[in-house]
Image (cartoon, rainbow over all chains, first blue to last red; front, side):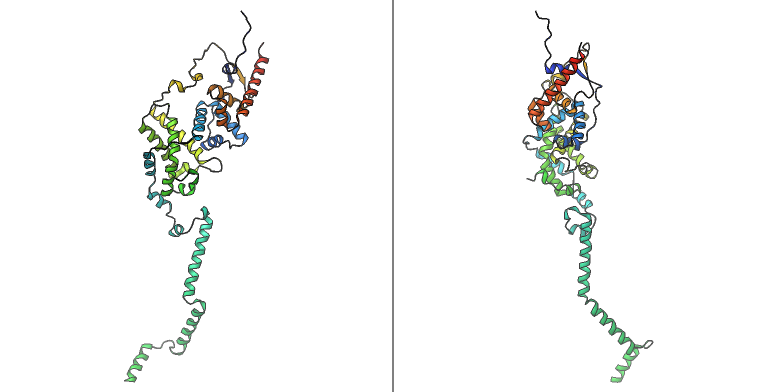
Length: 175
Length: 181
């Protein structure tokens, strides 16, 4: 019988070892974990997440399960899930969210640029003002009306004259 | 049917009802799959599974969609992030129910093994293995995954898993051979 020790298999070797000191599991944000699952983390951050996952059996199990689910076709869900979830958000929430102004609702969102939307609102206000001004005759007519009114007031109706008395005289003369 | 990556996230976070409804229909299969898988080891009823899925949607829209607003499309895909959120919510749901029971076949052998406290384990010093080497050894031996599965999880090719595993074991064997008398 040989007394020579048989070498340990890789697994046996690993199971005979323990980390010193045993690393404490660190928390990993949902977004970092998702980025890690997609292999999109920068190398330094990926190493930190690797260490956190290596130290936490629950995170390792999550990684295994999520990787499997994300790599396979998904079965259809019960319609009850969608019906119940859709009831969580009502039209009241939508109204509340868009209470800002009616004009903002009419205008396109331009992909969300707030300043662009404000600019468009100011532009629209300018257009409305200009159209109104032109329809009212513009500067020329306004000036002419003002000039005519001034002439009338200086020639035919001096200050302090009672125009109703003049009208009375006119009617009584013709009789 | 609208895909998850076609959802207008700004409109969703603004609480628009139609966008929310579209999002729910697109996200339901993924959330259902993740919740079912996460609750697999807990003997919960079908109603519990539906409640856990509802919990995920409640988390997403609670406090004026605060959680949804933390999502950054530049860092991770919506499906992956949603799967992580769904798993986390499902695990919390199961903990609240406190009915954790695992079918014995689902538990890795290492977790069931009774540790012989008389055998003193050799200590791996800090820095001997890289984080990636440690993780690969943990997936292979503690989680009992094969090389292809580990490659899929880590989004690397199987050959890289094999070579990282090989280098890690060489380091361990060298280190402990030097230490042994």
